[in-house]
Image 1 (cartoon, rainbow, N blue to C red):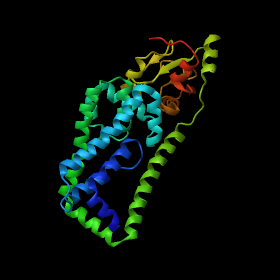
Image 2: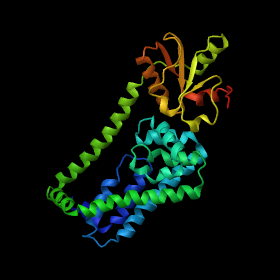
Image 3: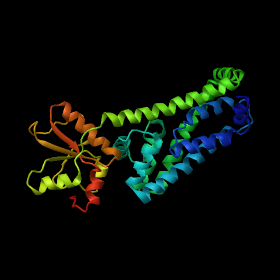
Image 4: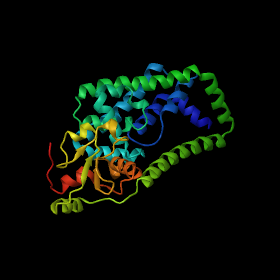
Length: 307
């Protein structure tokens, strides 16, 4: 434990840089506690607060640019990959799209304070072709506010944090084990949240071929597009009904409870479509299924979309 604190005191900027970089690349290793501790230890060490903050901003900017360019080149595939790496619930894609559609690049000012938002917003900015200059400007300012607030908290409560660190240091290897256990519990909690989320949405899906077959024989179901307004701008399945973001929870289709209903989205594991499908089933609709693969599967099958 003494070695760990010695590393933070001696190489605080490098430790902060590495932790922020890894977290912003998508690993579930929180950097905010490290920034708080670094802020508390500034009085002990000879590090400049400005350089410490600059190191955190540079690390975040480097990682965020990686995801920005991934989003620009790979589009929605980058968003899906990032959701899986970060262990965030798959619905984070749609939630982030809705927030970004409302606020645009300025939303990056607070992105890192919103769980599940920061991990996707950078790739989304690239996917939506947000100008690089705007992305860098808002992202740097937002990161500085985020990292600076953590360091300020550490500085304000340095006495309490010092007492805690001293206690852990006295515990020796048991203190280190306690910290590692806390990190393991955090990662397991994130994983369990994701698995519980996916289990709650397990239900029958309808394939693109099945949906096309129903349409060809004149038994087309009610098709509902639950994507964000940003995603809907790229086109939709012909004849699909569009739901606004604010109406998802209260939406009730004007059809018989025995009608066939198909919902689709463009998120991993059809998360958004399955969420709305579950709500409709709870309202008494009996034949509700998400479209397996969503709009991406429809397009991949070479089928037409309308704008």
